[in-house]
Length: 345
Image (cartoon, rainbow, N blue to C red; front, top):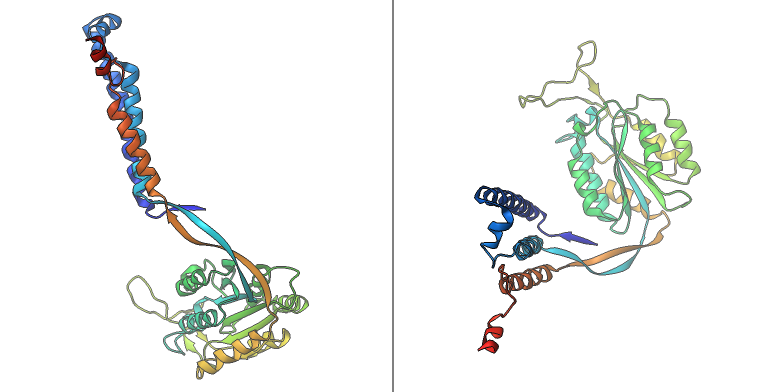
C-alpha cells in the first residue's frame, strides 16, 4: 500500500512533458537548419566530435533524473508494516433523517443539529463497533458502508444536510430496508440499527421492513427529535432569508413529532425509544445500555501502522544519474579519454 504525502507536487511532472516537447522541437529545428546549409551527411562531417546518440542519451538521463526528483519531492511513501487488531463489537447502521421537517426549530437550534449531535455521541461511545451511515428523506442513500473508521463516520454525520437528498419526503420503511441491506447477512445477534427522526412517514411499506428486521434479529433503537406541539419549517435561500415551507395550496406546513410510529418500530424489534429533548444524557445512556445488550462479534481488522517515507531512494537515483550524465560527454570520445592521451605520450 503506497501513497504520495504531497500529491499536489506531482503537477511538476508537467516540466518533464515540456522538456520532451522542447527537445523534440529542437531536434526538428536542428534538422531543418542543417538541410538549409547543405547535404545533411556532409554537414554532419563538419562536426566530427558531435554524437547524436550521446546527445539523446544525455537528454534521457536528465529527464529521468527530473522525474525522480519530482517523485521524491512529492514524498513517495508506503506502509512499512501491517498488523491485525482484534475488535469485539456490533455492526451498527445509523439512519439519519434529513428531510425538510428536520429543519424545524421546535428544539434548538433545530432538529437536524440535535440528531447529528446525538449520533456523534453514540459513535464515540462504541469505539469497537463497525458503523454504516444511511441518510434519508424521500429515498435513502448509503453514505458510508460498514467500516471501523469512526473518523469517516463522524465526518459524514457532521456534513449531513437536507441538501444531500435529491428527493424530499419521508419513507421510514425504505430507510430501514436500506440499513438492513448495509449490515452483513447470516450474522444473527450482532446487528443493530439506530434511527434518528421526527417520525413522519408518508409511505406504506414500514410493516414489511419491520418484519424483515425482526426475522433477521436486528434490533432497532429509535430517537425522536422534535416536540408534539410542532413547528413551522424555515428554509434557507440564497438571500440568507428563512421563508417558511408551504404546501401545494400555499399554506404554511406544520410538522410535529410522531412518537407513536417511532415507539412502534422500537417495540417490534426489541429495541427502545428515547426522546432526548429534555434529558439528552439520560437518553444517550439508555440507548448505549440497550445496544450493549447486543452480543459482541469478534473480528479482525488489518491496519497499516504507518507510512514510511521513501523519497531518499528517488533523490539518490537522480543524483547517480546526474553524475553519470556529467561524466558522459556528448562528443564522440570515450570517458576519461585523457588517460589514453597520457599513454600515447
